[in-house]
Amino acid sequence: MNRAVMKKTMYFFVLPALIFYLLFWIIPILKLFQYSVTDYNGYVQSFNYIGFDNFKTLAHEEILGVSIKNTLLYTFISVILGNIIALALAFLLNANIRAKGLYRSAFYIPTLFSAIVVGFIWSYIYMPDEGLIASLLNKLGITGIDTNFLGSYDKSLYSIIAVDIWKNIGTSTIIFLAGLQTVPHDLIEAGKIDGAGRWNLVRYIKIPLLATSVTINVTLSVINGLKAFDYSYIMTNGGPGTSTNTLIFAIYKMAFTEQLFGKASALGIISFAIIIVITAAFVLTLNRKEVSA
Amino acid sequence: MTGTASRARSAFTHLLIILIAFVNLAPLLIVVSSSLRSPSNMTNPLNWFNEFTFESFRSAFNRMHFPTALLNSVILTGVSVIFVVLLAAMAAYPMARIRSKTSKFLYLFFLSGLVVPGQMVLIPIIQMIKDLGIPMNQYTPILMFITCSLPFSTFLYTGFIRSSVPEEMEEAAHLDGAGLFRRFWIIVFPLILPVTVSVVITQGVWIWNDYFFNMVFITKALESPIPVAMLGFLGDQQNPAQWNVLFAACILCVLPLLFAFLFLQKYFIGGLTVGSVKG
Figure 1 (tube, helix red, strand yellow):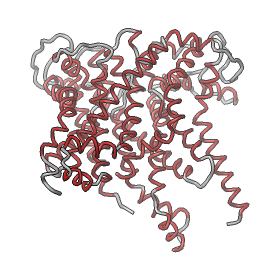
Figure 2 (spheres, chains in turn blue, brown):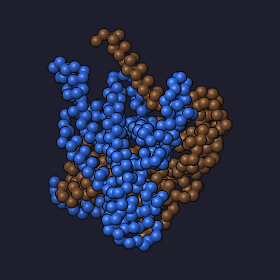
Figure 3 (cartoon, chains in turn purple, yellow):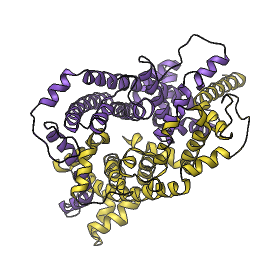
Figure 4 (cartoon, one colour):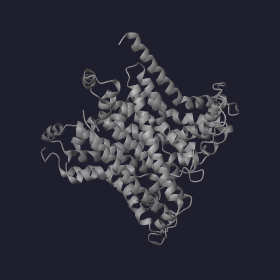
């Protein structure tokens, strides 16, 4: 293209966005690196540089390992289960049936809710004795199941992961559905003529062509999982004990409840490294696997 | 395949979907039924729809200062979304048109912001706002809503301008003497309307629902948007005696977006997929 048409002066268009982005996102992120080697408490603007003490303290404390483990578990389960369920739903909703739009909306509705509302509703569902699950089991005469979903050490994390999956499934389903609708019809016909069965059509034609939607959904859910905070904050306050402490929740608690902002920054840097490595690994692998129609 | 067999299969698919949808939405039915009870009706929520009254709604409505909260939400979301559209569309224009290392760097630079959670950087952000002498009030969250929406919005806009706005159209306008600014606003901006819809909906929904930045900056009840007004019920979630009012508040909270969805369904669904199909 004519160089006179696409000039460098175009870059002025980036400036307003760039100013916002630098001032309120990038510079604060860089400041984390500075604070991670101080004993700054987040309120009083006077602090000492203490070298890598924050990192050393963190390395000795249980919370680091626990919150990394919880975050990875959260991400792993929500990515795998969330995407498998969404993919299955998308195949189901892609069938040639009436009222498709209505069904699609039924699964999409929860994605419109604020995390607070979702947290409140599920707190009721999970409530021991009187909650939805507990009273349903009761009505069906099933006893002997511990219904204290949010209050037990080994169930609380899985319980909030389920909430996250419920809330986000609609978005993933719709993205998969859109992907399925771009699969060319003649390709399916060609497959049928060549004698491919229902499963083979799915396995060798539909899933490979869904690669773009898979990349988008998996990437978004990985990021969402690694940033998990809402339900630990709203539903369990990280507890019981540290069982639902995700990295971001731990950072938040350290910074605002314990007022150890230096230490929280150090944990932030560690989380940052984990998030970047995992996200980059996912994006690079998935991009390589994509095929086009 | 015979007609009967295919009809049986389609009936089975319907049944299966309805069953899954019912399980998926059952909690919401309980929420609706409980919200329509009086606050003192403590019978088991499973005995649904055994009373119809708006008493709980009235109570929730007053406690949330609903009309004020609604207005606050509309202002916060509306102003933020307008700025996001303007800033992100403009920023995407050179990133889509210029093919250079700088342009590619900027594109990835913006996109990478997506992985950073706001909770982590909140304190330095507050400092920055103080250092710049920006007053902390109910409108301060707008700054954060704009900033945090930029990564995803510039990503969507850049992809779309690259793939769907032909450079030739601009060339013609250039020959007619249109400057850069005119070309962008008269030719490019109207053509990227599908992404604008997508940006307005995806970013509008998260901004409308966000409680975090709002909770940090807004301290007065009458300045709160809906999600922050909801936070006032945080202590009630473990207290069955308050459920009916809490559920009524939940319904009030989701009603505005549900209405928007009802009337703009096509755009909500389409908006999600603009970026995903083209990739």
